[in-house]
Length: 67
Image (cartoon, rainbow, N blue to C red; front, side):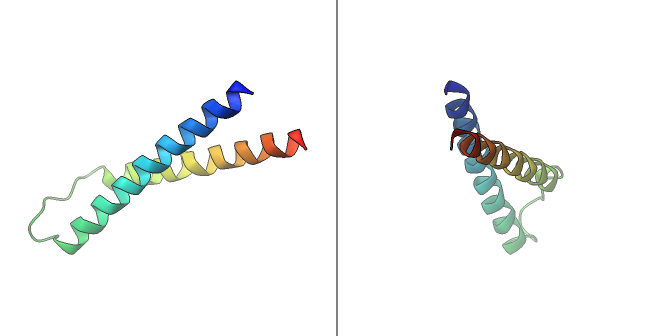
């Protein structure tokens, strides 16, 4: 059971970071002439999106196995 909670916490942290980075990316697009674009931002967003998807599938599998 603790693994489920650890996975859920990791998912929440990744999702929070993903939301923050997406917000940062949106602000950069809005002010692209003023702010220097971070070169690895899109790469990090992509990585976190994939991680969230994988953790979500894992949580769904855990939930299904408990039924």
